[in-house]
Length: 98
Image 1 (spheres, rainbow, N blue to C red):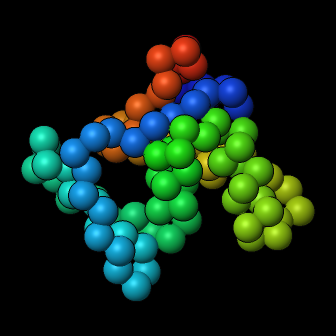
Image 2: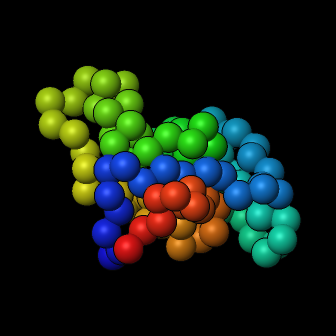
């Protein structure tokens, strides 16, 4: 897995269609003609990427939203890596992943 620093910022890729369903969202990539299913937590992470949040900000939001005692760093980083690998989000130019 690629190391993602807490200060790495993300943004959603253009040309993605999001359709909410009761247990998450169906995400369609027009360019690649692919459909992805995001569970509710992955959808939150994806939407925060669309707001140009950093990995650290996303972790803090998830921690607060679910009233967790410990930040789910590994789970959030795994989700971000998956979103990156699938081409749904990209790193902001000034915070490229090493």
